[in-house]
Image (cartoon, rainbow, N blue to C red; front, top):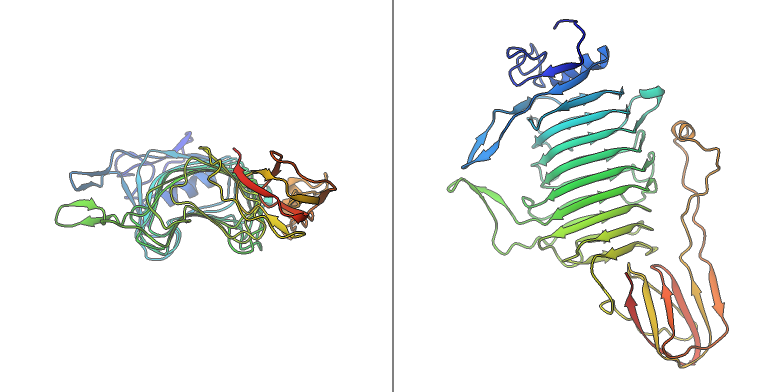
Length: 439
């Protein structure tokens, strides 16, 4: 290619024969010229534009005119201040193993990719810093990643893997208009707590499509058992439950299995702490499988547009909060009053108002909060300190605190319990109560 200086390196659908700098006709290419274009741009300080065009399916026939074939993994090397732009082309990965796209360390970069499809058992897109690059750090930071759709056809695969086992992933925006996965839609992992921070990222999946899955599948897997370093991220996602959708050769159409309820499908599976999630769910799953709070999950806040199939709360410290888009009110269950001197915990994800119906004969009562995982790092600990100190671990949580009141109760009295807080009464005659969820 010419060494003339121009703002963009162009990848075209018949390049270089149709005027593009690179493309499927680039000699020796295994990535339709895209790897060569990105490598050239990296070495020569250029941005990249990948041409697209209308594709998809109509009347049962595929329109393949916007497809680039990947016969090996497309590797995005460490970069700083790089922009890869383009249309809504299709990247079709042909191997049975390996990632379709693997993204290394980045700083202040912007990437726009089209629809990416793969039948590999490995993740379609892997966002994982591994190499010292920007400012000699192993990090993905202050960058934007935009995908039209990420499609995984293997039942054990993941559409998008966000992996900090080798380096930090902080302060980014990651958007997929759609994930369409037979296995896991998005998996965010810190190596079960052994890796680096994933923090202050905005991650959006407008259409979490699980329709083609059959049984075991997860829309969002947020962490793993032992995760401690996935914090302060903002997720905005919707997940549509499996319908057993499959291609029917006779009709040339996608069809849906009748009366299909996937018993093992989970919408969002949470292990991490202190994240904010805006979620909506559609379709039928087993009861309790829209959201599952796992044992390590703590201090997450969820704004739920709906929960048609409900939640399962396995959290050891149940301080995860759901703010519902509808009044829960008295639909929250009211537990029995505990025996005198025994504590009872609010294990629901709602702030509850306890209404005292009859006061009984109470001499003393106590509220215990849930403690805190609020971080208290020294003021001098900068981003560079974090980057240079991968061994840094979260501080221990503050233990719970209590407040006792040496007094009785009265009918109509109300007491507020946050998720994870406990209350105890000392009495000779038990009071009665009812719980109400607050918004």
